[in-house]
Length: 252
Image 1 (cartoon, rainbow, N blue to C red):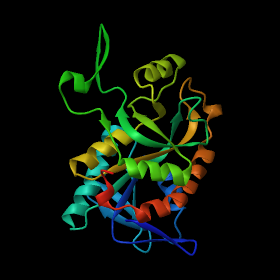
Image 2 (image 1 turned 30 degrees about the vertical axis):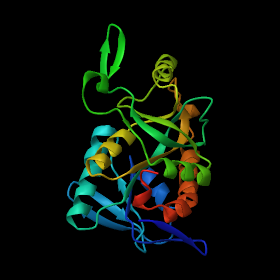
Image 3 (image 1 turned 60 degrees about the vertical axis):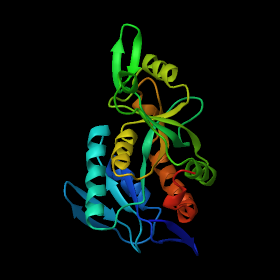
């Protein structure tokens, strides 16, 4: 639903919004931006967390693009069958950031949501699935919404990559940057959420708080608590953006 800021509180109007995270701790970080208790709503194949006063629905959709797509699709289908479809899906959570553009603790908003490894390896290099004549590898959130979200939260706009395997080496990070020069962040769910949204004709936005650098896997360098805090703060600042956005702005 479209959020409104009123006397320091977040309220909502008529457009329904679904926020999909990977895991419950990310979902709860988003929920902390909104006052009041949360109601659990069982749905076929999933459970929604509904915020008070008609707030956005929150979904811990699962880890990885396949489960995220399936869970998001289930929630979108249930809403449509209830006669109250969602107007926007927001893929949100923490993720890895590509240095130097997205340091730990920063925010990235996707102007492109791209499947990093959907395609075929050949003797001449990697071919995305589109070059094979199938599907898509990139979804584009509404440009006006991306700009407004970036202005409100301080997030940097750029490509957010989705992969089924988290990068754990410098070589893999360099390869991804070579293939995707505009990449700022890496996560595991955005493309799956976007595929589900596209199947329902619903626009999508992706917002990531950076918890670690993309590259060699070093758990000691991760700042998950800091990133979750940044995610909560970002959703507080996102309220007036979502308040003013309508589905009619999806192509603007």
